[in-house]
Length: 360
Image (tube, rainbow, N blue to C red; front, side):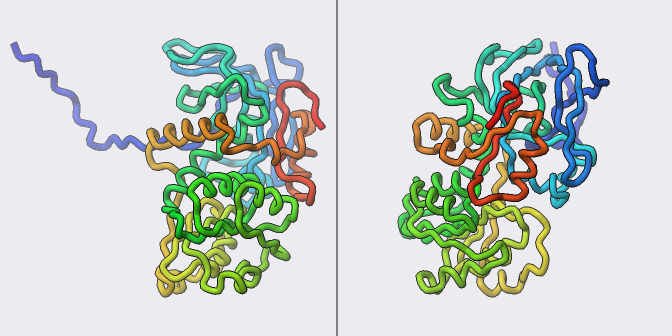
């Protein structure tokens, strides 16, 4: 008996790594039972609250009851109308740095349980009370961690990949431009690689002080978002840095990163992924600079770095509490984005409380 079964050819099928996707929600009229508030970016710098049906998880899905969502730089760029991911059009839903609890399991979900506290990744549109996603999109976290420590974990897989691509050794001089949330986390992770020099730049003295606490050996305040890093560091590092990791929003920060990169050095493209104008590719050629992207290329890598990131937080080697300066309820999300947009000196990271309706 021939036990071989012919399988139809699928030569055109391509298995791509997972990408950010928007959690499905159905908008409903105000006053609809079993509905929830959802933040919607109607147009640039205009956020409103609509109502959406509380979703039910389908087969192979879970429902997450959301506690906190951080306002990430990618949210801010979308809010400003600078960055428009391929899946984003107006009106849009933002938010992807999630702290939440598994609320309901769909059929066929194994290993996870209702009541587990989780952080999310690759889920967009989380400024709401409930979202539905796949088990791949969540990572269970230890019960003893504070809810406020959970949502920023989302940045760690990309940051850990960036640190690995940087190939940092005890003889490496590293520069991180920008000490917002991602920059401050990058500083904590880069310090674990024991570089000879870990220099950082930022506009705010408060952020630089925190960066020193996290392991920066040199901290430089730049006068403006368009100020030259080399002007600030030239006396100490006239030849630049072997590794430059920009953690800024603006794409034009790549121009500054190239100036600060030494001959034969590496730019690790974690930030500055907005449009960039007047970038000098001839200078890249002349300086023999490598530019390396940092988003994980395989799902297994993303999961590995996700797990490593959670472990670092659990073991106290990466912390977020010192960065969190503001918490707003979901009902005041427009104010939260206005504060994030204005970037006052006393503000670093803003969380939106999607559960309690209380904030400070």
